[in-house]
Length: 227
Image (cartoon, rainbow, N blue to C red):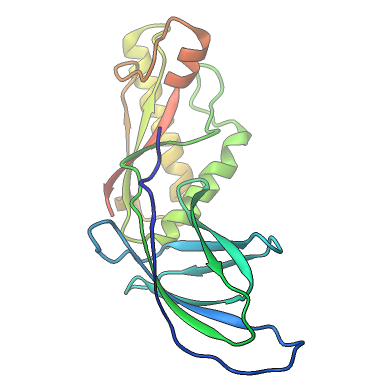
């Protein structure tokens, strides 16, 4: 499943420079604006700039106006990533040329979250709503994401494979969705931002005739209701 559309990156201008000695590190200040593809501002997005030269990571968070400033050393290509549900999504890159003066740029980053996203590594004990410890990392990252994106409202959608009784599967999927919701609520997310619904075996994404297919159908999805 493709998680996001292609990001759009626009460099608008460079304006200033200062002369220094040869040992000085020179920086480019980026004035960043984050929007969706309809150019609506997008607050609370954590954007990472990863230097391909040094592997050092720089980051900023868009404010209520969708903007933030960040200073990056000249002379490197920076990969841009955006914090999403339980990962950092790769986007595009920006090349800041080597220059013996400071520069300033305005850039626009446009992106949209997927309407539905399957949480990776969120698993339960067999025929149980008890989370496996390996689930905690993904859920902790989701909670961190929701603390940033304060307007985001979601539904946890629980799904099972087709093994067993249909009614039992529906009840199990509901309990699992509620377990995930309760975990996130304990991380400080307001209860009116999260709902939980079990769909049992009614919405498979692939065949239930193989073990691999069944594993894919047993999943917990995040469905965006409002952002």
